[in-house]
Structures are given as C-alpha cells and as structure tokens.
Length: 370
Ligand code: DAR
Image (cartoon, rainbow, N blue to C red; front, side):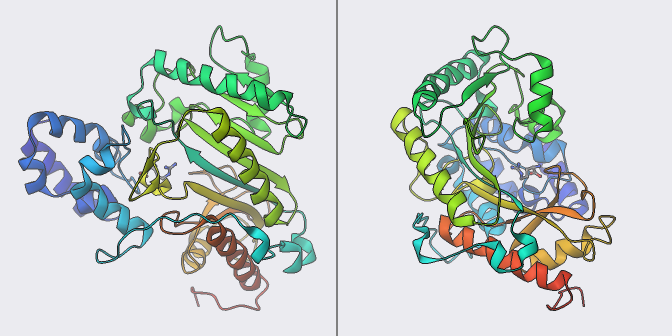
C-alpha cells in the first residue's frame, strides 16, 4: 500500500472499529513525515491492526528500540490502554515483597480455597529481535540458550523437571501425542499459526521451530519458549494463596536471570514485550472462578465483562484469549493494567477484584450493570 492508501485505510478502520487503539491514535501527518525506511519499519509494527480491524491494540513491536523510535505513534496508544494520562510521567517500579499483604481467597469464601490460578511474566532477551522479526535460526539459537539454562534448573532439587521441545530434530523433541497432552493439561501453548493477529505480525512464523516448554518436577513452575515473547515465565497452582504463587514465580524468575543473558528493558516502559499491553511488569495474574449468575451460566460474558471492567479486571473464557466461558460459567479474570503498577499492586487488584465479583455473584455486592 502507498502511504496515502495506508492513511485512508486507517481512517476507515477508525470509523468502523473505534476500539482499535492503533487506528485510534494513528497520526497521518506523523506517518507522512517519516522517511521510506522508517515508514516500512512502522508498517511491520501496525500491520496486525490493519489486517485485523477488530484488534484491541493493533500493534506489536519488532525490536525493543521500536518503543523509543516510534514513541510519537506508540506512546499515546500505550497510555490509552494502561489508563495513564498524557501529563503523567510513566514510571515503572517493582515490588515483590508479599509480606505486607495476605491474599488468600479462602478468606473470601471457603468455596474459593481451591481455585486454579496462574501468574506469568513476559521477558525478552535484549540480544535478539522480538519474536515478530526473528529468523528461524535466531528462534532456534534462543531456544538453545534457554534449554541450556533449564539444565541447571533440572539439577536443582527445588525445581527438577524437564525441557520439552517441539523443534524438529531437537534433542528435547517430544512427539505430537505428548504435545497434545501437554496442551490439554493447560501447560503447553497452542499452535500459534492459528492466531491471525500473531500471523500478520510474524510472531508465529517458522512454527514449530524454536518453541518449547520447561516444566518443573512439581509442575507448578513453567517457562514457555518462543510464544508471543521470547519467554513466558509462570507459576501455577490450585489453591487460594496468591502470596505463595507470587513468591514461587519471583524465586524462579531470579534463578533464570542468573542463568540467561540480560532481559530487554526500557527506561520508560520497564520490561519490554512484543505487545504493548504487556509492558511494565510484563505480568498477567489470573484465576478461574465460576460465576453462573453473572454469566447466565456461561452463555453471556457481556455483563461480567462490564462488571469486571469497573474493577480494573479483564475477563476471558476459561480456554484462554478469545475463548467462551467454561462449564458453570467458568471464567478467567485478571487485572488489565500492567504498566505503572508493581507486581504486588497487581496481586492486590486481583484479590480485591475477585472478592468484589464474588460478592456480585452472590448478590451481596453492587453491580455496574444495575
Ligand atoms: N489480539 C491482539 C493482542 C491483544 C492483547 N493480547 C495479547 N497480547 N496476547 C490485539 O491487538 O487485539
């Protein structure tokens, strides 16, 4: 497309899809003012939001430098998503000290003592392009670096476990049946080549090369390699104590920082990620709850999404992004904002939000839909 065709297309998307944040903040004069090389580089970042007009964000960075290089374009949509006004300086702090707060869902209601919960952070190695711009060889080289680091975890009695690769010919390669079993167990990530947003951005390219998963012996600490970010480092458990979950993640993250090259960070946005929605803490903390009343037994997520939004929470189906509610209204809830908030603030927001939604479900709390 010529620059004027891009401008015209984005004007149309802005009219038809006002929630496409990239289209909402696209500035035609800024785009026209870039030289041809920079325009081509920016097009790779925003192509996903042009090809997929229903995008929520509509952009993925291709290198850590993109957030600085294209700040006039990207900063406004980052602020819009994370709710940071233009006149507020973005400052990403970190706080993992969970001793100051006790977030055990069993205290909300004994029926919440055994909820499924997961917290993950996205990290990218500063010495590689981001996943949308990697070659197949770079994807395999990064996986080799990660696999080497995991050999140390496997020898550590606090972790044990194994690395499972889906790269053809990898010494850690698993077969299709094992891959399917791990996906069904909600451990391994799904085949990315089915995600149209990631496909346009190049993030799912070269599938399945450079992809795999470390899983600890207790299966409560996992690391995805080569998904939407270089690494998705996560702790998971069935049980309501968020403090224990976050501590396990923080401990494992610390071990990986010792074993791997430096992670990509920005002086403004904190941890650098492919998707601007994950900048800052790079953290998604989530738990599953059955909310049959608020979801009309799983048939309608619209009301619970509105209720959750008023609490700063996002709601997904139990099967992950773009999925429907599960049996009995099973949904995945997580704090939306990840930039400008610390890890402990995210943990507290998840706990407080879960308590408020539970109260709405039981009819004892106010609902935004009333
Ligand atoms: N589907 C893309 C990304 C939205 C945020 N989720 C991520 N990063 N997994 C969109 O722009 O709508």
